Amino acid sequence: MNFIVSVLSVFAAVAVAQGDTASSATPAQPSSAPAAPAAPNSSNGISIISPTGTRAYKSGEKMVVTWNILGNDPEYQYTDVQFQICDASGGANKVSPIGAYLTNTTAVSVGLLSISADVPANIPPGNAYTVRAEIRGTTGFIYFYSPNFPINKDLAVSAAPTAASASAAVTTANAVATAAPGQATTTKSGAISQVLGTLAILPVMMWL
Image (cartoon, rainbow, N blue to C red; front, side, top):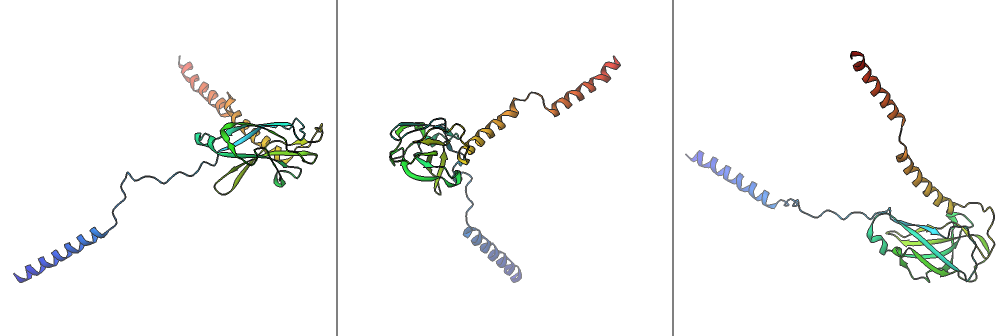
């Protein structure tokens, strides 16, 4: 009898210990817990439409800057952007700010899509200037450029393309190349499938 009581006491002690361990464990996260916030969409940006590089400007003249919004985030239209004229004679990797802001250092909203401002005075004559759009990102500024154009100098008949304008051309070419395959109506694999389908019908016609 004493042996049975001892065994029951041991089982009771083990059960109590297991209950204490279970109650001290971290409770599981409920299935309805909110997910982590999504990372910002890095595909947002703008594409400068004008100036196009086909016109020469002089200090004091009106310059109209227009752009399109890239990406599909509706909140991006409220993002601040600044525009300034930079010296692009060294190429896209050596664009140099000259302090010639078109927005008077005051940012405008991306959703405005157009601004008009006077070309600042005292800009040295040159064939390769660009409008640089400046948008603050999570780790610094993100820049977008217009094609190059001259200021206080005549438009060159055959100006050599620079890396700044070439980058815009590459972006456009990539967009066209991406859309082009969708326009094809017959592909090599499609033609083979049509031939195989025709061969599959021949035995049936022979039986008839």
